[in-house]
Length: 253
Image (cartoon, rainbow, N blue to C red; front, top):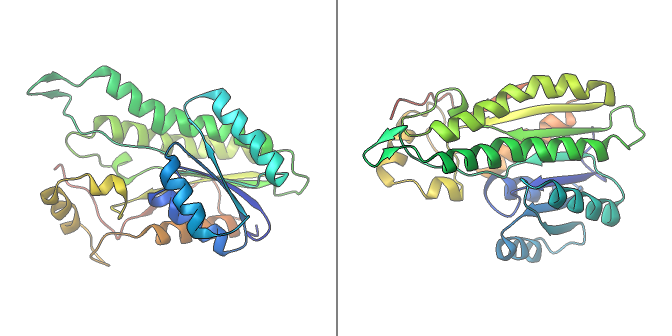
């Protein structure tokens, strides 16, 4: 499916992997709606892009009405939707049983709600708008998981569970939406230069970097974006979770 002259929605598009996707899509001729909650970063990005082909909508992906209102704004601005790229999410580090007691249940629930339920919420509502397109291939949904969904480290129970859920959702979603002409794939990134990674302690970053093979470095958001672009353009790619991780395998800690 062509990127040019089509319309994309990117959650978490004001920074990190989402920002990389936004910049890539604009560069390749798409119209883009950034769905985020960080007004300052979104406004700065739009100013930097300097184009009428991008809009920003403050959106809470965990809330149905917020996403519905954002989709209506996209329809009003661009007339249609072709691509959904879900990048909104966050992490939290705590052992199931730590020095301060059991893992806080409310934080576990929040991470699941944002990373997994939020992804599902945008996917299901976005698919409804994509389905209104007339072409045989109506659109593409790309979700973001993590290699932590396969081999989560100590202290990553909430994050790993949420990303494993996104991975588990991929094939079912692709099968559900196949009759509507909508493809669904997931990218499972390794360690990338993002604001989330910048929150990690230096010793943890070094430990993670040691497990990369080649290239022996952190990934860049533009590399994530290039893979998303390939998924969009390769019409036979569907129902697959693709690791993007320099052949790294996370160690227990």
